[in-house]
Length: 196
Ligand SMILES: [Zn+2]
Image 1 (cartoon, rainbow, N blue to C red):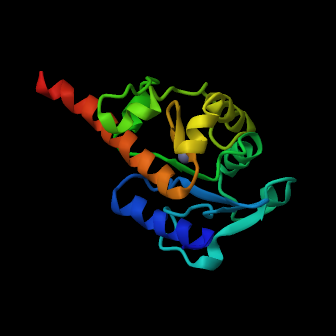
Image 2 (cartoon, rainbow, N blue to C red; image 1 turned 180 degrees about the horizontal axis):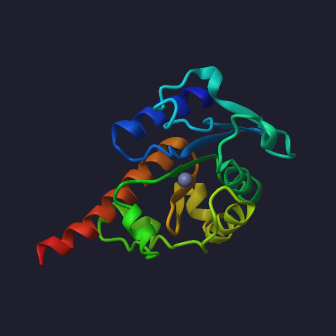
Image 3 (cartoon, rainbow, N blue to C red; image 1 turned 180 degrees about the vertical axis):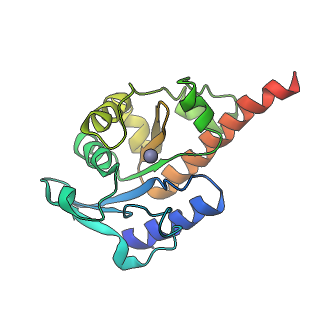
């Protein structure tokens, strides 16, 4: 059984191996009781996800203590918002996956086209907001509303126009698996255009 810190390091490396991010890096977090553990700012840009355990930022989910941490991730506010609003959420990944990004650029939902993604339904786009703002965090939470059951059982996702995706779920294994499956489904939608 990995600790929250070990899980974040492990899945950060796996995201890089799968080329599932750009150098903006995205971020990975885990809830442990009343605390959040989250990858640091510039996890990819500066560190290539080759992080040391002491670089993982942690602090209380309630209150503002984490917001003033110098290495607090730029979309950390959205992670806090999700943990605040959804007790079912135990882990979160924000990423800019290669095959999901065209749908974000076009502000289009991702419909399920393979068995592996049927359980998640259509992945919708949140309302647009500028990155690293409380408005974006609020829009992400709003976009996930009503998906509590899915989050408790496995994981739920929401797209961010022009930006990327947030996946929240019961643990990092389910969240990462969901991210990979949605990325594969997105590739299948794009690739089918070439089969015509
Ligand atoms: Zn981002």
